[in-house]
Image (tube, rainbow, N blue to C red):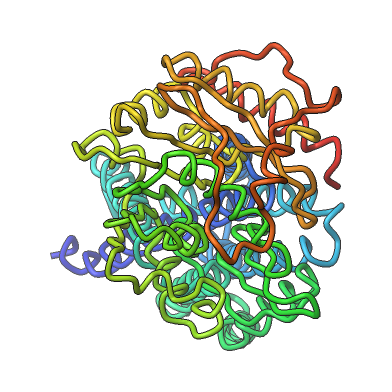
Length: 507
């Protein structure tokens, strides 16, 4: 009979374990995702954040031995502290990055440490409370089961549901509310054990009110931080499972940022995209089948459509949010000339590496327009494994062109890509163009046959002419070739080299 009387308390305590485990993992993932977005190199950021968080949890577990009396009261207070620290973690980090970038790392690891210690205190206290009701034989297995189930639920929901639909700031605040709800539950269940019930009730109420206010004002907080960071007025902003997409509008026109990195500026994007597309397209002669890997903004497709011979274009873009934005928003459609609505175009929203692996079609020209290799997930698209797959999809007389960072700022990185292309049996033909928003920017043509200078270009270009095109293939001494390693999946030296070279010029 006594076992049945305590069963409801046991069940609700185990349910709270599920919630606190889910909340703790959300805060960890949010910190890792933010560090990856804002600092780059996702492997390094997630590794250091997770390592710091787990260490802090260990410290919290060790500290739990010093809590001897009034365990329900301690548990309630810790839940409220976790709710506030973890719930506001994304918002505070966003604001720090915008207004005090020099303090971002210190705040990141400071908050990760605080939240980790508090989360490390939670489970030991719950176990000691449950120990009064549950036999030790079943206690550990039950607590750990619910702990792992909570972690599983969040690890699936975080990238698929939470971030795409709520964003990082609202996700943090939502789970802060859940932590506070556990505190309210503890307030009710242990109301006869708590010595200062009224004070605890007021603390619960204030915590929930702060979190709710933050949730309602999340968009304002995001806008405040991003307006400061981007300077120009933000006209479009969206978060997908893959990236943060922001479009700004200023005196010089629109700009596209992915995870805070500039992708194009309206005032000079024509220079970048004409240089990217036309040396390969015009040299082929009359290309019929063309593929674009990346380039979800449709600018490269706009340039390809200037060739009447083109029968089909396949655009492979990982993020459907990008292609949707640039196909439907009137301002973006104006920039790409409505290219994403062309009847010749087929849009495939998938990973380009997998698309190359599983496809069989060949193409006369392949345009590779990926972001720079700031992390290992993008770096794999610059490896010899990727270029070997690319070669298989290129027709015998076809050309591929790869945007390849700055040969002036990141000279070693640029020639690493050239060496990597050559390692799979393709000829790498280097060239560059001046794009004011980026500076001196590099490209590489990859082919089985030698590349020949075209004698004609489509009409209506704003940058390239048959007379100026040869200048792009002239490399001055400070951009001339240097020895470089092959970038492989197993080492990805390019990511490290790129970070070192750009780190010397970026704040």
